[in-house]
Amino acid sequence: MLVAGLSLLAGMAFGAGTALGGHEALSVLLPGNPLEGSRLFAEKGCVGCHGVHGSGGTAGPDLGRGILNRPLLEIAAVMWNHAPGMEHLFQEKRVARPSFEPPQMASLLAFLYYLGSLDPPGDADRGALLFEQKGCQTCHKLGGRGGSVGPDLTGYSRYASPLFLTAGLWSRGRAMASAMEQRKVTRPNFQGNDIPDLLAYIRSAGAGTERVYAPPGSPKRGEALFTQKRCAECHSVRGHGGKVGPDLAIAVKGSLTGIAGAMWNHGPRMWAKMAERGIGVPSLSTGEMSDLISYLYFLQFIDPPGDARRGAAVYKEKRCGSCHGAGGTKLVAPAFARVVEKLSTPLAIITAMWNHAGQMTETTVEENVAWPILKGGEMADLIAYLLGREGGPGATPAAPAPASSRARKDTAPPK
Image (cartoon, rainbow, N blue to C red; front, side):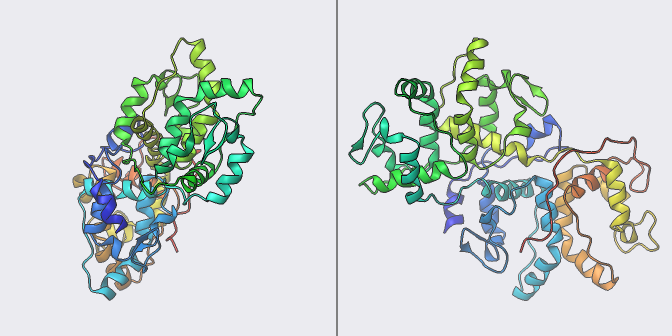
């Protein structure tokens, strides 16, 4: 039911970029609607084995736990590492391995990544404690009790999404800061699950049963807003933009509400810098807040550029050439030099790897070759090597690359 409900919200898919890691690729790979892939998740039968927050199959891990909250090629590496186990399940259940086109694979991976943006359900009891500790009741009434300086928060009890609350916090932030200063109330910071917990408490205090839901934010629209609202005059994204604030492709981490909380926490400093530069504090509707935060969240979806030198070492270490030529004693699979001529993008390569994983599983068993496990970052490096060779794998990489400072997540099969 969850996946079916998400599918109703799905919009347009996004295209496959020519390369990953660059600023241009970031723009191309941003989804118009990250829930587009939920339709594929259901139609391709993924939900038969993988649940999402308890809804769906149980043969594989529940993907709503945030275990795939990592860049696109890292998610592809997890799927690759897990391929033999999945192939066994396909055969056991007597179902065909689903095949994908590159744009479909991009949509599916964006959906899997988006699942990591969702916070655990809020805790109303903890929210009640936070409401008191952070001094909210000094200015705000809730359920008939509290101050009258700010709006009555009982009206927020109908909102199912925390984004309505975060949009309100942003739009009224400066006025709230002034009121708190006058009353000597310490301006609260929000960490972890604070915002969902507060909203859970606010909902519990409301008498009505109406629930208003926010549609998923569009990273594509958020990218445009980032420029329109003049965020780019102070903040850069992978080196493109202003230098007043941090590069958000590096600094932004966490869930959607975690990002919204960080915007609130840094509000006073941002307002001061805007005043210095003559920039007005931008207003953000709930929809705009949703789009902008989705854009910031998806900055971590695009892998850093792979390193062809390291990729050459991966190719050798994983013994890819033993089956695909270029130094192997025999050719039991297509030579990579021929394959890469037809697969000119990272998405095309990972899609082909998935589509042929069943056949490759059988071949590795027949040839008594261990399944190659790709650790964090190795997929990007291997693809950089494959795509960077005019003479195909086995040729010398064109130039050395500096060691990457990126953090590499474990891409072992999820349990």
